[in-house]
Image (cartoon, rainbow, N blue to C red; front, side):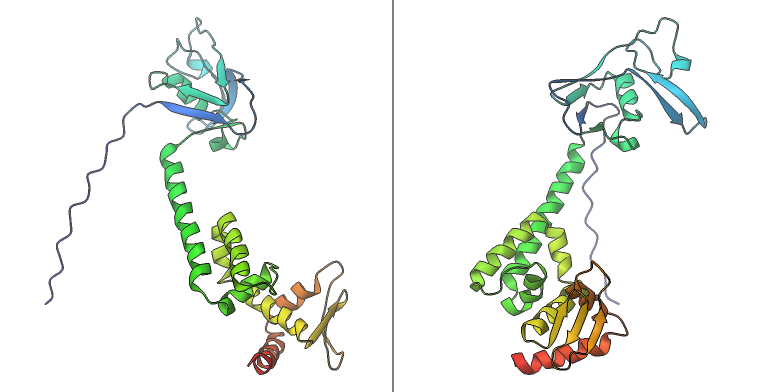
Length: 255
């Protein structure tokens, strides 16, 4: 019986501090100084009630109904779009964390800057970009052509110029670029566009037609692109015969 290798001990997890500084940022604009009212109303999930909250540095609670008669409101002020809430300012952090204008609560005014999450997102984005660039580098021009056609890149350029344009698309949105290689509509559109170029089919505003007989393949609803309509039609059960016919004819022509 084969023995499995002993597992390496995992790296001990770093304990999170109980209290820590937090930074909040305005989502858009904000200017040099941006104030939000030190009072708001939130829905308290624990009680099922709407409750008022208020930022008062001298109070232990942010809920108005739990504050003393001596509660004194204070400004909530963003400077250059940022607000630092120190670890010692727990009531300010709590006030901002549950505030309805916080993006985490469905608002659109401000959000907490989470450096750890941002770092992970940046790393993921770097890997995606690397993977997208690798597709352009490692695939032949024939393998890339469906994506080239789908993106509307000029096929009459030199291969290096085509790949340069592909790299630009890959860097702009690597996730979407990678997904194009597994998207059936990309291959179908390539087949349709090449069939048009070789005059196997013709398209106009009313639909797609066989070039030799003029017979209608599929009609296009008003306002819709006939190339897109035919590409989508080819992926349906009804259009599968048309799709296979186009493939076979292209194989004969392109050898």
